[in-house]
Image (cartoon, rainbow, N blue to C red; front, side, top):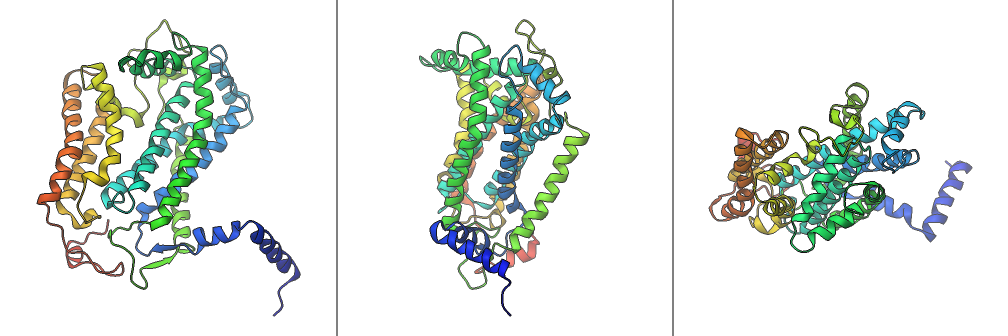
Length: 413
C-alpha cells in the first residue's frame, strides 16, 4: 500500500531536518528506544515528574514576572493586583505558589528513593552529586521567591537568613552588605532577589541537562540494584515507561489541583498577607516547610557560626554518600541493617521538620539537638560502620528473577 502524500511530505521534511540537525534521531534514541531496566517501580516516576514540575514553574513564573513590580513600595500591591485584576492571575499564582511545595515533595521523594536503592553508588557518583547541586539551587530559588511578595514573613525571613552569613569570619559582613545592596533589607535587596529568582530556574535547567547526560551514560539504577546485562533485562522506554509516567503525572496533577482549588494557602503563612513592616517583628519567624529540618539544625547549636556550619554541612554531607557507604550492594532490599537505619533516618528528618516549626525552647529544643546529633552520626558513624558488620542477602543473577531471600520476605517496595 502506498503512503499518503501528506505522510510522505511529513516524513520527507523530518528526514530533511534530521540530516542537518539530528534532533529527531536524538529524541528517538534517548526517549523512545532508550533501553531501560524492566523492573522499575513507581518510585522511579519522580525524576521525570520533577522535570515536568520545573517546566510548569518556569512558565508560570514568566507570566507572573510580566505583572510583578520589584519595588518595596509596590511589590505587595502588585501581587494583590495579580490576584484580583489580572485575568486568571489568581490561578497562575496559586499554581506557582503551591508548585514550590509540590516540587520539593517530588524531589525529596526522589532523593530518599536514591538513598534507599543506592543510586549514589558507582558508577553514578557524579549523577548523585549533580542531583545535590540541583537541590541546593532549588533551595536558593525558593528562598528568594518567598521574599518577593514582600509580606511580613518575606521581609523578616530575608532579614534572618541573610544575617546568617555575618557569622562567617572576615568576609561575612561584606557578603551581607552585598546581598542587601546596602545596610539593611530594602529595595536593592528585593531587586537582587527578583533578578536571581528569575535567573536560577534556567541555571537549574542547565544542571538538569548534565544530570540527564550522566544518567544516560550508565543507565538507570533499579530496585534490585544489579546491572542489567542479560537478554531481556531491558525494555524500550516507550511505551512502557511513558505510560507509567503519564499515570504518575495524572495523580500528581490531581494532588496539585486539589491544593490550588481547595486549599491554596495550606502551605502559606498568614503573616505574609500583611505588608512588610520593619518596625513590627512577627512573634514567630519560620521559613517554608521544606526548610524546617535545616532550620531546626541551625537553631540546635547555641553558637551562631556553629549553627550555620552544621546547617550547610547537612546538605553537603549528601555528596559524600558514595564514599561513606562502601558496601558493594546497592539496594536496601538485600541490606537488612541498612534498611532499618534508612527508616530511622527518615523518621529523624520528620522530627527535625516538626522541631523547626516550633519555638526553640523546652522539649522541641531538646529533641532538635538529639535529632541533629543523630543526623550526622547516621552519615559519619553508622553508615561507614555497616561496611564492616553487615551481612547482605544473596543477589539475583538477573532482573527477571528474585533472590530466595526476597521471595521469602515478600519485599515488593
